[in-house]
Length: 205
Image (cartoon, rainbow, N blue to C red; front, side, top):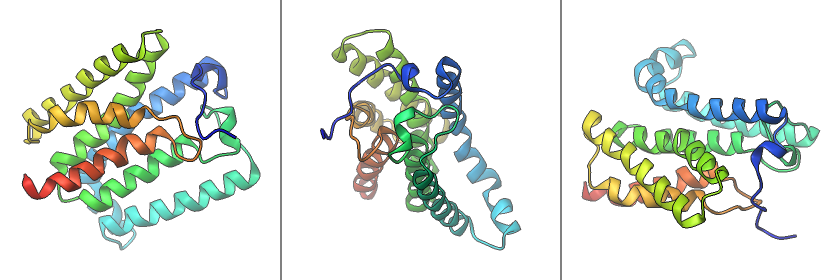
């Protein structure tokens, strides 16, 4: 079996058809609120469970892994997921795992966490919809890079993210989204690869 997944129209494989696809896109965009919840209400939420913010994130990640294992054992998919995800780790699980790791590693650097997560929550569906329009790969890459670089520039204006990172992170996030692998979803690669780059660059900022 090939390690690559054939690039197809996601609507064709979404549970719920076009409505499932739209729900999936909406859920993706809705993840943009997670940094706000973490930094504004994270302590209050974790205190309610007698935990620190990072402990709460750790528990949520472990619960996610357990829940995904159960889902795979049962071979089920939910509304908005793709039919083939009944036999492989879902994009939702991969994305949530990557988000949890990002909080655990960079929680003290909101100026990096915010653009990393917004690049995933907005950048991934944006690139996907541009690709669905039928543009050639080079055009998709350029448009996606400009869009995500814009996210990092906006972050620089709003929360003092170094502007220079926009030059790197735009193309890097798009490149990280590109592989179609069976064993890991682009929701993970699009966050974890730029996260690794941010960790490497952090001592120089």
